[in-house]
Length: 230
Image (cartoon, rainbow, N blue to C red; front, side):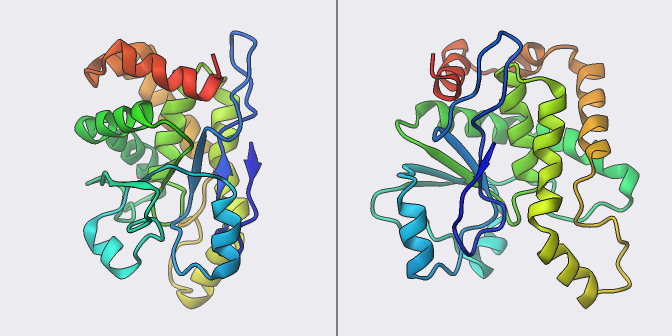
């Protein structure tokens, strides 16, 4: 994993650098995850352009996009896609409910299928994002890493990093809204660990889950080739 220094983005990271169960590693510069790229100044633009991103997938609802447009929406050389989740943009009612919501997001099958088809068809580097790059972005990342046979411990570790990189934003949120429960905004490893337990209890293997999405085998292999460099 590598975080990129774009000043206005706290949670822009690469899916490269993780080991796989077959003994390989995910490759850098292929697939990136982020919080929403908005309100870019010249310094942000110079930094992001160095990454040569060709495809961007925005997971937010239209009302979120209207209030905070993505920098890439009208970019002349970037293919921008809005593939929104119906679940995951509203805060969970309880902390215990968060892992179940993550599984519900994974089971928005039409959305997940479109996301993976878009990634597979992209020629160059892909960036996907939601609002802060933690929940919707986190579950898509988890599935991609599972698809590439990255160990569970690394998937959980990648998820929990969001709370570290978003610490300033989370702290400011709780200072502004002191009545809000302190767990909100976090990414405790237990949340993803429980989600993966629910996932494997239901599907047993990532291949069974991918079959449930009705993804073509060629699509799956193209994603693996993109991230693994094989």
